[in-house]
Image 1 (cartoon, rainbow, N blue to C red):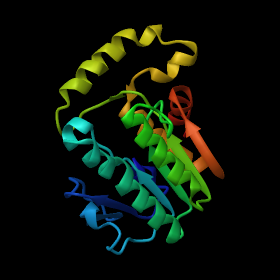
Image 2 (image 1 turned 135 degrees about the horizontal axis):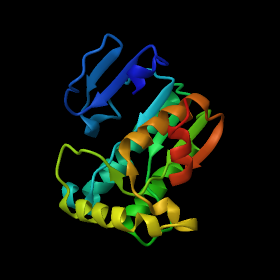
Image 3 (image 1 turned 60 degrees about the horizontal axis):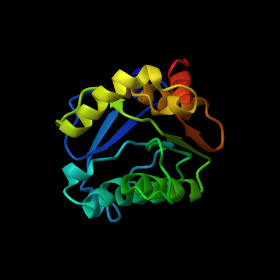
Image 4 (image 1 turned 180 degrees about the vertical axis):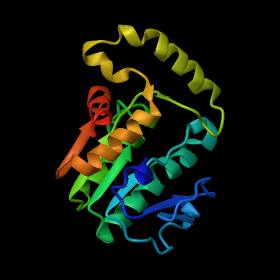
Length: 200
């Protein structure tokens, strides 16, 4: 979407493995995230962070925290130090650094770190279940997604933010926020995400 928007002169992808996309404006940088503190990161005006895993896939709470907190924290700190203007983060509905739920507490702790850094703007997206194709199967999440789809119509009022949504809508909203979101910290839930996603 970033490439197709024409808004960015260059898109730099920090990934664990090559992306199956060729474009003269795409710079692919294969990264060992365990060494993120040591490697030279390219300068960027806007940084989009969608790093994340599940406790099941990570194998332990410690391994999960490394991927969902340590890696993004280092990326955010180094991006801020390098002069990036905006940090755009995928978090989770319910994120709260005081939560008794480990997953939501880690997400909330990451949000706290990111918003404390000297970016011109931070955009935090808090979707519930994401609908879309995944590179690896997540059976438990799949069951939860089916349930979320079935009961979505019943989630009204303050519960609307727990509705499942397409991952593509979150991606479109992130791009729109980076382009139009203004300064300071911003947090987006279901309705705000959909509104942004429909914005040109």
